[in-house]
Image 1 (spheres, one colour):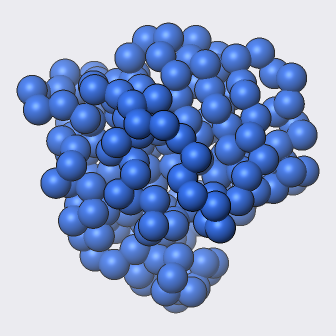
Image 2 (cartoon, rainbow, N blue to C red):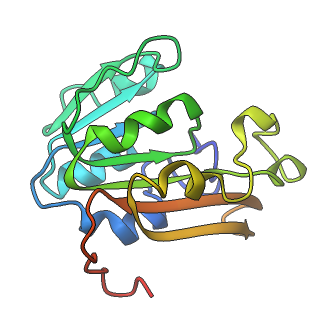
Image 3 (cartoon, rainbow, N blue to C red):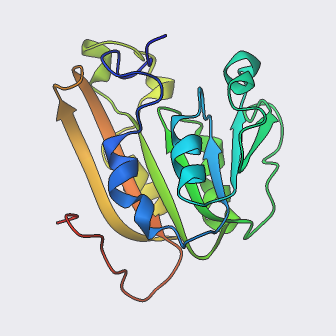
Length: 189
């Protein structure tokens, strides 16, 4: 099975963006993997010692994660039900290749103080290159900064096109729920 967004990669290979900033999540603290799919990031974070809650609408994908140590699996449709997570319940939230704007207001509050949001998904312009093409699933220029930058301290942000592993237009953000400067991981500059 190939990964939807990165067909040259196996579904188990984590995103470079997540790998680059996962070290900002406080050690051993709980992490939420939203729309986790086959669980490439849930697995990575569980191996790093985080208790992970992996949530997705796709029950078939979740079956691969069921019973793995350190991973709690939740089969939920996050788009038709209210946001199910309590305030300050996670030290990290990872979201890749998923966009549901109605979640934006809940994300900062779901993070514990000092918690880290790591997010990347497709942006306007991607419709010329491949899926998704629907504007409902594509971020407008600067949208992540506008939606999350007021509630969280932005550590890193990117918006642009990439050729590898396949042509795509993406936005990425890493933001922390704190006001003091964040110690950046080595290689983040």
